[in-house]
Image (tube, rainbow, N blue to C red; front, side, top):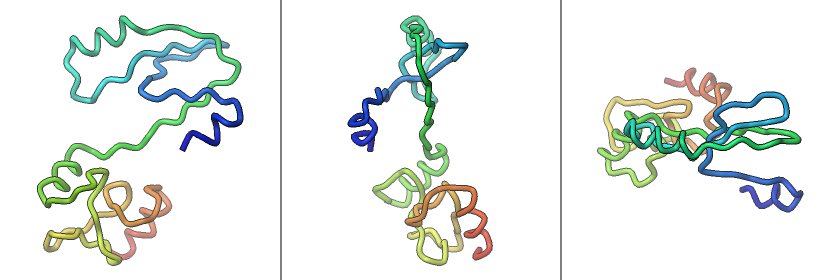
Length: 122
C-alpha cells in the first residue's frame, strides 16, 4: 500500500482526481463515480482547488469495466474486480467463456504483457 510512500514523506491522496496540471500547480477535485449524475459532477467541480506542487506523481488505479463487474456478480463471484479464471483462463462458473488481461482474476498482474501471454492460451 501507500504506507511505504508515506514513511518516505510522500503525501498520498486517494478519492481525489487531478483534473489539470500546469507548471508548478495542479488542480484537484473529489472523485466521482463513472455513473455520477450531472449534479454530482458539478458539485465535485465546484469543490476543486489548486495547489502548488514540487513533484506531481499521478498513479491512476485500475477498475473493472461495468460489464465485467456485472458478469462476476451474475456468476456469484465475490471479488468483482474481474472474472475468476482457472489456469487455462476459463471463467469459473461459466461454460465456454474465457477471460484474459484486466478482465481476469488470474493471480497475475493485469498488464498488457500478461494479457498478450494469456491470449496465446485461449
